Image (cartoon, rainbow, N blue to C red; front, side):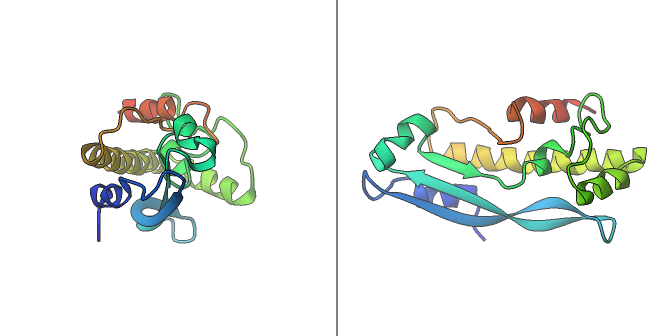
Length: 162
């Protein structure tokens, strides 16, 4: 098994100015299994897209040399705003599976465990980023998500709660 440093080393330098490539890997994150009612550390997909400086009219200049897709954001931000300074659902369930999940997290004990497992997933993400930063001198990076207005703030809010 290779870690983030080794993955970043593989993709550090594109082989030409007008190329792009992607790497798909797996990393273990905490997932709640609705059927068993238990948390399990299971492999989840991680995708890294790399762009040469001339690829797609300079997308690297606009978006960065690497785009790292960490998978389902709720593994780091929680479902329906349940985690953070004011725990509990902030939005209705979007579908039946989410409603089942939210109902299963209704007890204070389950909610605490949900918060702990989500914090552990965030720590896995941050370790991965630290390893990547050590391997490649990143000038800047941004944690971003399609579903969260400000992914970094949301993650910080979850980590701040003790």
